[in-house]
Image (tube, rainbow, N blue to C red; front, side):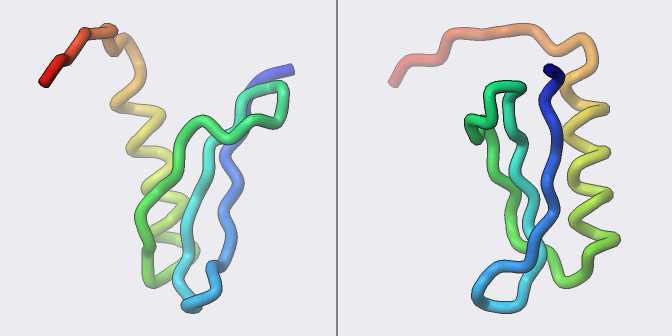
Length: 60
């Protein structure tokens, strides 16, 4: 099963998204947005950014 984005309203009345893996595990959370449309655009931005993204190791 493919992953999916879920858009929801948080307790503060803002809209957020979470990206769930096919197993249902949450693998990413979005920042708060004022509108559902903005949260959906956040999902689309993540999709665009991930297309062809590489994996880099970062250490402090």
